[in-house]
Structures are given as C-alpha cells and as structure tokens.
Amino acid sequence: MANIILQIAGGIMLLSLVLSLYRFFSSGTLVNRVIAFDTMTIISISLIAMITHYSGRTIYIDVALIYGLLSFLGVVVVARYLEKSL
Image 1 (cartoon, rainbow, N blue to C red):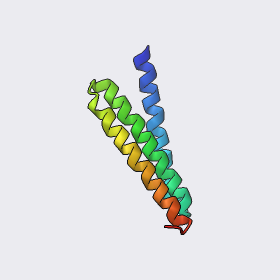
Image 2: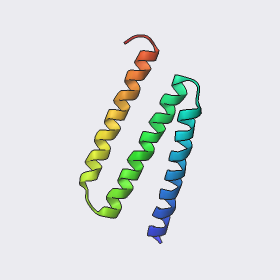
Image 3: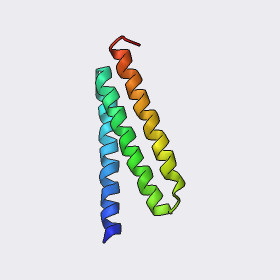
C-alpha cells in the first residue's frame, strides 16, 4: 500500500516538474522564471529523496541537502540583483 502511494506521489512530482518547466520557458519576466526554477529545484530535491528511499542509500540525502542550500543561495543572489543592491 505504501509503495503504491509513493509511486503516485512520484508521478505527481514528475507532472509538476513538467508544468514548471513549461512555465520556465513560456514566461516573459525574469521573476517568473526564477520562481519556476526554484520550484523545479524543490521538486528535484523531492525526487532525490524518493530515489534515496527506493535505493536504500542515505548518501543521497546529503546531496539533496547541499542542492537545496545552493538553490536557496542562488535565489537570494538573483533577488538581490533584481533589487539592484548587489
């Protein structure tokens, strides 16, 4: 039962990744692209966590944490750039 729920959640994550990718390429403003990119990184972190669960290798959690920290730092840098205070 839990395996089926995880597979459904994985399918929903892949669908949301495709929709975010569409928003990234079809959006006209830089702010919308940054938001779409941040959404894609959050979804990717969720997919990495799911791969960690299925493979049983906990080292992937460290990869997801570092990826999340770098993503946050990138969004902060772009936000500071957009405010013209960088």
